[in-house]
Length: 198
Image (cartoon, rainbow, N blue to C red; front, side, top):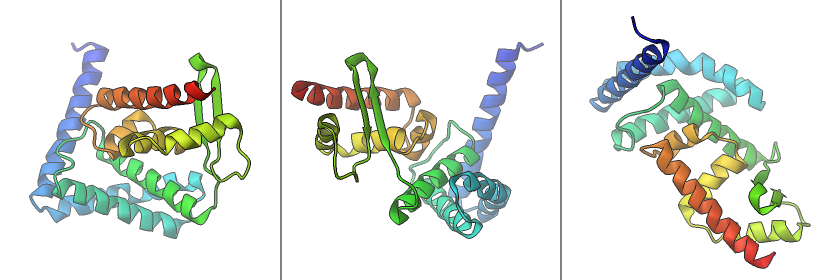
Protein backbone atom coordinates (compact mmCIF):
# COMPACT_ATOMS: atom_id res chain seq x y z
CA UNK A 1 0.00 0.00 0.00
CA UNK A 2 1.40 3.39 -1.05
CA UNK A 3 1.99 6.02 1.57
CA UNK A 4 0.04 9.28 1.14
CA UNK A 5 3.15 11.24 0.07
CA UNK A 6 4.10 8.58 -2.49
CA UNK A 7 0.53 8.46 -3.79
CA UNK A 8 0.46 12.27 -4.20
CA UNK A 9 3.79 12.15 -6.02
CA UNK A 10 2.59 9.43 -8.37
CA UNK A 11 -0.57 11.43 -9.14
CA UNK A 12 1.55 14.51 -9.83
CA UNK A 13 3.75 12.52 -12.23
CA UNK A 14 0.69 11.13 -14.01
CA UNK A 15 -0.66 14.67 -14.58
CA UNK A 16 2.76 15.84 -15.79
CA UNK A 17 3.13 12.89 -18.17
CA UNK A 18 -0.42 13.46 -19.47
CA UNK A 19 0.35 17.17 -20.12
CA UNK A 20 3.54 16.26 -21.94
CA UNK A 21 1.73 13.67 -24.08
CA UNK A 22 -0.87 16.30 -25.05
CA UNK A 23 1.90 18.78 -25.95
CA UNK A 24 3.48 16.18 -28.28
CA UNK A 25 0.12 15.53 -29.97
CA UNK A 26 -0.49 19.25 -30.56
CA UNK A 27 3.03 19.69 -31.93
CA UNK A 28 2.39 16.83 -34.35
CA UNK A 29 -0.64 18.77 -35.69
CA UNK A 30 -3.51 17.15 -33.78
CA UNK A 31 -6.14 19.93 -33.89
CA UNK A 32 -8.79 17.79 -32.14
CA UNK A 33 -6.69 17.73 -28.96
CA UNK A 34 -6.33 21.52 -29.06
CA UNK A 35 -10.09 21.91 -29.59
CA UNK A 36 -10.78 19.63 -26.62
CA UNK A 37 -8.48 21.72 -24.40
CA UNK A 38 -10.28 24.85 -25.60
CA UNK A 39 -13.73 23.40 -24.88
CA UNK A 40 -12.77 21.85 -21.54
CA UNK A 41 -11.39 25.08 -20.06
CA UNK A 42 -13.50 27.81 -21.67
CA UNK A 43 -16.31 28.10 -19.12
CA UNK A 44 -13.94 27.73 -16.17
CA UNK A 45 -11.82 30.60 -17.51
CA UNK A 46 -14.84 32.86 -18.00
CA UNK A 47 -15.88 32.16 -14.41
CA UNK A 48 -12.29 32.75 -13.22
CA UNK A 49 -12.11 36.10 -15.04
CA UNK A 50 -15.19 37.49 -13.24
CA UNK A 51 -13.22 38.15 -10.07
CA UNK A 52 -11.15 40.61 -12.11
CA UNK A 53 -14.27 42.50 -13.28
CA UNK A 54 -14.05 41.20 -16.82
CA UNK A 55 -17.15 41.02 -19.01
CA UNK A 56 -17.88 37.64 -20.60
CA UNK A 57 -17.21 38.85 -24.15
CA UNK A 58 -13.81 40.22 -23.10
CA UNK A 59 -13.05 37.01 -21.20
CA UNK A 60 -13.74 34.95 -24.35
CA UNK A 61 -11.37 37.15 -26.40
CA UNK A 62 -8.66 36.88 -23.72
CA UNK A 63 -9.15 33.11 -23.48
CA UNK A 64 -8.82 32.73 -27.25
CA UNK A 65 -5.60 34.78 -27.13
CA UNK A 66 -4.30 32.53 -24.34
CA UNK A 67 -5.03 29.43 -26.45
CA UNK A 68 -3.17 30.99 -29.39
CA UNK A 69 -0.14 31.80 -27.20
CA UNK A 70 -0.24 28.25 -25.80
CA UNK A 71 -0.37 26.76 -29.31
CA UNK A 72 2.37 29.04 -30.68
CA UNK A 73 4.65 28.28 -27.72
CA UNK A 74 4.30 24.57 -28.45
CA UNK A 75 4.88 24.93 -32.20
CA UNK A 76 7.87 27.26 -31.67
CA UNK A 77 9.41 24.87 -29.15
CA UNK A 78 9.13 27.25 -26.18
CA UNK A 79 7.11 24.57 -24.37
CA UNK A 80 8.38 21.01 -24.52
CA UNK A 81 7.00 19.92 -21.17
CA UNK A 82 5.01 21.41 -18.30
CA UNK A 83 5.47 21.07 -14.56
CA UNK A 84 1.86 22.20 -14.06
CA UNK A 85 -1.50 21.27 -15.54
CA UNK A 86 -2.34 22.75 -18.94
CA UNK A 87 -5.28 24.61 -17.42
CA UNK A 88 -2.92 26.28 -14.91
CA UNK A 89 -0.67 27.40 -17.76
CA UNK A 90 -3.61 28.76 -19.77
CA UNK A 91 -5.04 30.60 -16.78
CA UNK A 92 -1.63 32.16 -16.02
CA UNK A 93 -1.43 33.52 -19.57
CA UNK A 94 -5.03 34.70 -19.32
CA UNK A 95 -4.41 36.41 -16.00
CA UNK A 96 -1.43 38.24 -17.48
CA UNK A 97 -3.56 39.41 -20.41
CA UNK A 98 -6.34 40.54 -18.05
CA UNK A 99 -3.89 42.78 -16.20
CA UNK A 100 -2.54 44.08 -19.49
CA UNK A 101 -6.07 44.95 -20.60
CA UNK A 102 -6.81 46.73 -17.32
CA UNK A 103 -3.57 48.63 -17.55
CA UNK A 104 -4.28 49.79 -21.10
CA UNK A 105 -7.80 50.94 -20.30
CA UNK A 106 -6.86 52.39 -16.88
CA UNK A 107 -9.83 50.58 -15.31
CA UNK A 108 -7.81 49.67 -12.25
CA UNK A 109 -4.79 51.19 -10.58
CA UNK A 110 -1.93 48.74 -10.53
CA UNK A 111 0.47 49.21 -7.68
CA UNK A 112 3.99 48.00 -7.09
CA UNK A 113 4.90 47.01 -3.55
CA UNK A 114 8.50 46.13 -2.91
CA UNK A 115 8.91 45.29 0.76
CA UNK A 116 12.52 44.97 1.78
CA UNK A 117 12.18 44.27 5.51
CA UNK A 118 15.78 43.37 6.25
CA UNK A 119 16.91 46.74 4.89
CA UNK A 120 14.04 48.58 6.61
CA UNK A 121 12.91 49.93 3.24
CA UNK A 122 9.22 49.94 2.48
CA UNK A 123 8.30 51.13 -0.98
CA UNK A 124 4.70 51.37 -2.16
CA UNK A 125 4.77 52.93 -5.59
CA UNK A 126 2.30 53.98 -8.23
CA UNK A 127 4.59 55.37 -10.92
CA UNK A 128 1.72 57.44 -12.35
CA UNK A 129 1.54 59.57 -9.20
CA UNK A 130 2.85 63.10 -9.75
CA UNK A 131 4.46 63.33 -6.30
CA UNK A 132 6.71 60.49 -5.16
CA UNK A 133 8.73 60.18 -1.97
CA UNK A 134 12.53 60.11 -2.16
CA UNK A 135 12.55 56.29 -1.80
CA UNK A 136 9.90 55.95 -4.50
CA UNK A 137 11.89 58.17 -6.87
CA UNK A 138 14.92 55.96 -6.27
CA UNK A 139 12.92 52.83 -6.98
CA UNK A 140 11.61 54.33 -10.21
CA UNK A 141 15.11 55.47 -11.23
CA UNK A 142 16.87 52.17 -10.57
CA UNK A 143 14.07 49.87 -11.75
CA UNK A 144 14.48 51.47 -15.19
CA UNK A 145 18.17 50.46 -15.14
CA UNK A 146 17.51 46.77 -14.58
CA UNK A 147 17.84 44.31 -17.46
CA UNK A 148 14.77 43.31 -19.45
CA UNK A 149 14.38 39.89 -17.78
CA UNK A 150 14.71 41.37 -14.26
CA UNK A 151 12.05 43.94 -15.08
CA UNK A 152 9.72 41.21 -16.36
CA UNK A 153 10.17 39.04 -13.27
CA UNK A 154 9.73 41.84 -10.72
CA UNK A 155 6.80 43.33 -12.63
CA UNK A 156 4.96 40.00 -12.80
CA UNK A 157 5.66 39.16 -9.15
CA UNK A 158 5.27 42.49 -7.36
CA UNK A 159 3.32 44.63 -9.81
CA UNK A 160 0.83 42.10 -11.17
CA UNK A 161 0.65 39.58 -8.33
CA UNK A 162 1.68 36.36 -10.06
CA UNK A 163 3.09 33.46 -8.06
CA UNK A 164 6.54 32.01 -8.82
CA UNK A 165 4.86 28.88 -10.26
CA UNK A 166 2.82 31.03 -12.67
CA UNK A 167 5.85 33.12 -13.69
CA UNK A 168 7.85 29.93 -14.28
CA UNK A 169 5.27 28.94 -16.90
CA UNK A 170 4.70 32.44 -18.36
CA UNK A 171 8.41 33.10 -18.91
CA UNK A 172 9.05 29.42 -19.77
CA UNK A 173 11.71 28.76 -17.14
CA UNK A 174 12.84 25.16 -16.89
CA UNK A 175 12.70 25.19 -13.09
CA UNK A 176 11.14 27.37 -10.38
CA UNK A 177 14.45 27.31 -8.47
CA UNK A 178 16.21 29.00 -11.39
CA UNK A 179 13.53 31.71 -11.48
CA UNK A 180 13.67 32.19 -7.70
CA UNK A 181 17.45 32.57 -7.84
CA UNK A 182 17.24 35.15 -10.63
CA UNK A 183 14.52 37.08 -8.78
CA UNK A 184 16.79 37.25 -5.70
CA UNK A 185 19.69 38.55 -7.80
CA UNK A 186 17.45 41.20 -9.38
CA UNK A 187 16.17 42.32 -5.98
CA UNK A 188 19.71 42.43 -4.54
CA UNK A 189 20.87 44.63 -7.41
CA UNK A 190 17.92 46.98 -6.91
CA UNK A 191 18.43 47.12 -3.12
CA UNK A 192 22.18 47.76 -3.47
CA UNK A 193 21.58 50.70 -5.78
CA UNK A 194 18.89 52.21 -3.54
CA UNK A 195 20.90 51.72 -0.33
CA UNK A 196 23.79 53.77 -1.73
CA UNK A 197 21.57 56.86 -1.91
CA UNK A 198 19.66 56.45 1.38
